[in-house]
Length: 316
Image 1 (cartoon, helix red, strand yellow):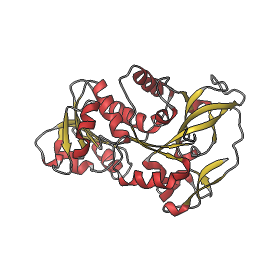
Image 2 (cartoon, one colour; image 1 turned 90 degrees about the vertical axis):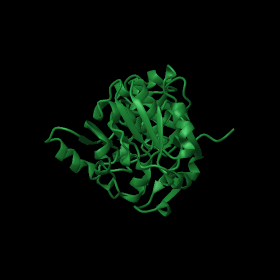
Image 3 (cartoon, helix red, strand yellow; image 1 turned 30 degrees about the vertical axis):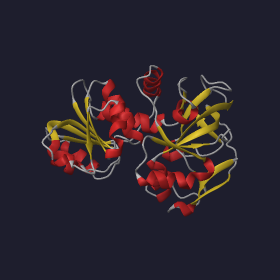
Image 4 (tube, helix red, strand yellow; image 1 turned 180 degrees about the vertical axis):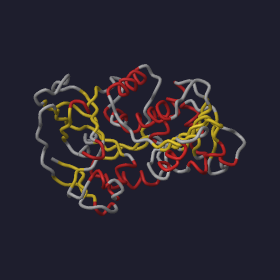
């Protein structure tokens, strides 16, 4: 089968389109014929070797952490799914394999696709969608009336974050470039800060929750604009982990670092909100699988508005 292969850690020169063996089903697994797979910063960070503690040193590896498609086959004890079901699959950074024509996954890591979404939109939910949900709800303790600032609000995670924060009744300030101001306002943002013109950390406003969806500003930089009991949430486990440990011992402002954990309940929450028209998925660019390198390069610019996706279905 056709797949995006990683031959060693490094840049895009380590990535190729090649042939890989079709996976064999184990007990409890389903085989998905992949229609689309999402591109996330974690993908090129895996390529760079930043997640080698999870991915090891066995090459070549098939890249990709999440996808959507149709059930092609089911193993024994595979649960609720049957051949032909439209689904979303989460492989994660430790398993990988989503950038291929087929992937075998445990039934527990596969979820029904929202009926109102195409495959290209649906494949973005386990990582970007649930990162936003879990960051705001579980780590940020979002609540009605809270003042929330979202850094990278126009990006893949951020554009979900703006919409989810509004569902929870928060007052949302979006940090993005000026060209994306109307875009984030259309998602529901109450205020917009153009980071090319103004540094929010130098302002007088205080926020109950700062969600850094692109891991650009540290807790130290954001501390002074957090409310006395405010929470800062970062999507990259860097120095934030140190701050998280330190702030856990003292009252007042808190730092939190998160790693997404897809699960059935949260995927159902997203599905319900999408089918009710309360959350929409915005795609910036859809690349054919053969252009995985170009998709990674574009993701690394940090300029995407919404999500980047690889399509495995030939254009009509």
